[in-house]
Amino acid sequence: MEHNVYQLIAEKFSLMSKSQKKIASYVLEHTNTVPFFNVANLAAETGVAKATVVRFAVFLGYSGYPELQQDMQHSVKQQLSTTERLRMSSQIVEGKDQIIYDIFHRDQENIQSTMQQLDEKSFLKAVEALLEAKNIYISANRSASSLGVFLQYYLSIMLGNSEMVSTVEDSAEQLYELGENDVVFAISYSRYTMSTINMAAYAKQQGATTIVLTDSLLSPLIPHADIALTASSQLPTFIDSFIAPLSLINALVAVIGKERMREVEMRLEKFEDIWDKLDIFYKKDD
Image 1: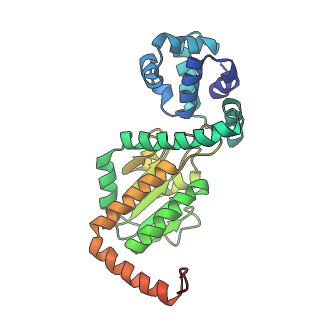
Image 2: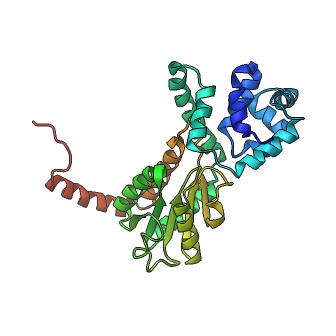
Image 3: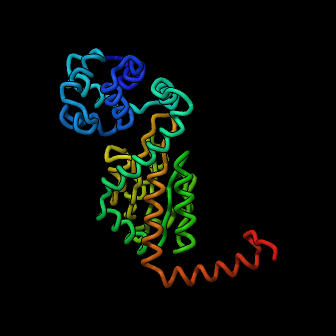
């Protein structure tokens, strides 16, 4: 079918039965993983009967689930534009009150999903790589830059060897001595910025250790990763949820702080003295 499958689902959402809406919501919130579910998988994840999944595909105009699945797999390669995501979300979310609490619930689900799918070995490898790195370069652009700035701020305080980089072209001087003792930490979420992908690819070529934080193992960052970390970011709206990725970064920072407790404590004491002398923080008058 030429019609975008996810837009089609959104357009027909209001006409669906309660069970079909349950399937539709799950499909729209897990566009990177559902295309590789069989009927039984999707039925189990949504709590409906397998026959309901088949009827859902037929309701959309497909001959059966295999045809729907093929269309969804094709769509994985074609990221929805921000405008398309906005239009889709407006069709499946009803009322201001609903969306307020729905967003909170979706964020809880993103954290739960990230916890369940966490690769602990990869997480600990990332901690070890960051602790052993000579220099840490963090590449995160557009909306994901908020995650990069947060990570860089705390790594800089704890380890003192991290900095933000943007594009390979703009950061050429910063990366002059990039080598095997360095780490590049790349963060990007769908629709994935080319500058971050190119940075990870360049770092890999230079022999640096590459850590990526992204939404799924289907991300174009994955082929350039020595260590891959994933955190769910699904929301039924035009923005990504960065609650789960931020929680994962919090965990990284906490473990690194614990591993380097003595060193971090000494650095923090010096920072506290500087902050006090420069009157950085608000102090309540006696």
